[in-house]
Length: 191
Image 1 (spheres, one colour):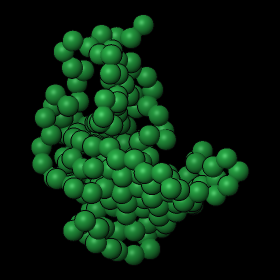
Image 2 (image 1 turned 45 degrees about the horizontal axis):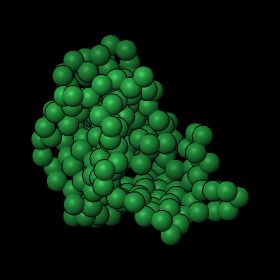
Image 3 (image 1 turned 90 degrees about the horizontal axis):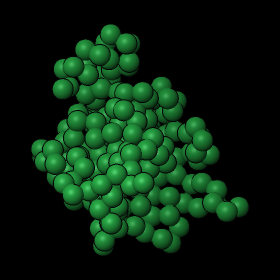
């Protein structure tokens, strides 16, 4: 599959990064499969989700009986798996993927500002300005394989500035079961 995508990227002129497996439509897609706990802190609020990534697909499990989302970063679609065993397929939510997947340096005009070790992983820190519709500037930390280990920025929320910190913990680099990225048996399309 990667070879087909690589050939397609060369044919259509999509940018290919030297350090990452490939960039797709302005996204830096990791070249390794992994799972992790993703922590999001927004002001005083904190949420934790389990994520799984492989071959351009990202699954976000919210736990505690909540829904799951499967993002297909190559087709820019998402599948919402709901607790009542129904699903919806919709265009990808830009805000959702930004928590886990970095945009390419060209797309964000990010600048390298240093290196740091996070969760035992060597990372490069990049500073970015206002990122498209997201009126927030900050930093993100990428491994050489394209995994975004941390993202930090301040953004206006309801008329005041709120600090956002998103990071990965308990990262395991290993193959992910293909079934995580498919619609489970027994689920029906929501009407």
